Length: 251
Image (cartoon, rainbow, N blue to C red; front, top):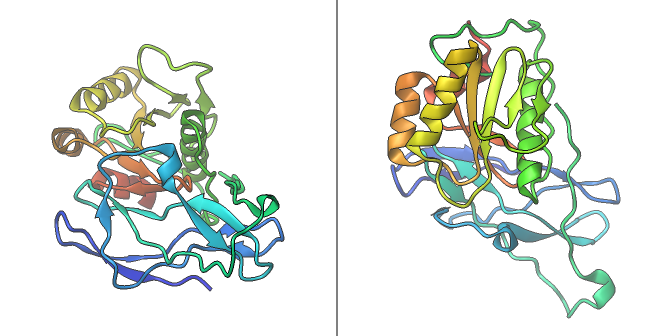
């Protein structure tokens, strides 16, 4: 059973109730990283792929694997690393038991600047979004595509290679840029995405692994560009008002 823990953002002081993502163990049992209660969350200012995994043991079969470190995107724009209880190991594991990253199951995503109407989708509640684990930059683009489809955008396609425009995902109703780098997304990137959306009369949505620079966040709020932070489990989290509005499916 998943636990929820209180997490306070050290940057702005906001309190959050955080519940970690669930991943499927090869044995079929759901696995969720056990959160370390009382330990302060830390802002992520630099990323390395190797440092973003945490060891977790399956309670059902005892198998130990590496899963994405739980992360929380705060509304202030900070991305927080949520501490996890270390795995208790009775002895040194042999080579056959060496942990290795495991992949979460994929599944299917809405957004809107103020100047473009939201797409109309079915009134029925959405199914739970099932993320795709991110290990590479391409995985980040795929996770964003799945999320947009889950929100209700049809025909979302990935560019074979990132074009000069920076637009990674397109459909008749939405365009999206995905920044998989270890630096916060810049003001220029947000403005270029917005201009592309304005020229094509589509919704513009931004996804980033390392969050956003302060001026980029402020400009996105002014332009109505939804901003999301991707954690390595592949779960986008909204970090501004337009993103919250996009998820609500209003319009």
